Image (cartoon, rainbow, N blue to C red; front, side, top):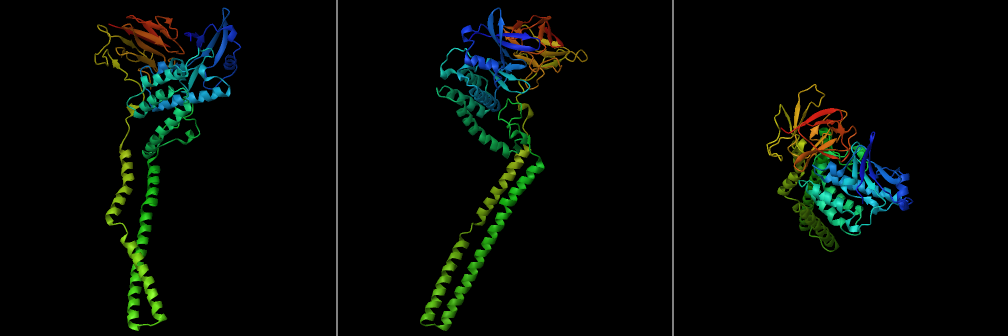
Length: 463
């Protein structure tokens, strides 16, 4: 596939595939993506430039997975979200009879809408024929490279996807079945910890990159509600059962005592009356029947569990309560969420780094007053790259809250030992010395360069 171009027009950004062959312009797949808005696919349009047909894909306010996870890790939640989105777009394609082999699964061309967190895929109907075994390989390698190794389930899922995707007859649905098995145990664990799924999410599609809330967005169950549930369980499984067993035990003991008394009375009566003939046979038959009942009650009483076992059962019944108290005492650390690397922000020229710079003899940094000059000048160290600029708190290392700054605006990268800057499809643009950067264009910065993110003016310094 030819390398696409990136173009910006007013408030829209496009990925452009040039030189569409005329003989393919009546291709069924091509006409279908132009005439229909297929859920999960980038919206495409046909344009002619200097007599050449071009295919424009709208990528406004979207970021590729490659850029989005350049310096962050993927957990089980993200793996599940990507796979769910992929499965949904494949279902949508089947409704329009679009061939799966033309769907590009390279992370560079899979885009996420930053507002809805939904994925959009690039469908290019003129893609060269590839082997089926390698169709999912780019996505599988992306999982392996970016998986968070602190999450055992995520690592297992990444390697399983890589292994399964190499099979010629691989179907995404088969991997989703594997994920369901992996997550079923996690759901049970989260429920035991006092977390539940929000009611509005029950009807929503599963996944992480959806407009609706996903089913794995946890909410804390109120303590009063949790106590009521546990109390109800104890009432049903504890005292009530003990009460029933106690009543049964007393019935057995009463039956044993009654049959023993009757047995003794019959023995005394037979000895006293000394019956003969049919009367003797009848009394001995009654005595034998009573003896059998006596043995039955004696066995039931002797078979009752000793006090030690009852104590063990009582300890088992108390275990859930103690487990509950453990999870009440445990508070997950908030900073463990996927918020990206630490923001090294300092004031008065004091760098937040430990001095292990990758730029010998230089101290690259960004200075300025992000709040429009009303506050104190701030300094952001750029010694550890890449560094992302934006107002999305969960991913930006340099957080700029100005309305003109996009959620994910730009990124500082290392380029041949120097600091480079790349615009990430921002709405209001990134400027270096007054010149706006094109999308995906990397500019090497020099000491003293004026940088503007939207309306936020900053300065790049190295000395």
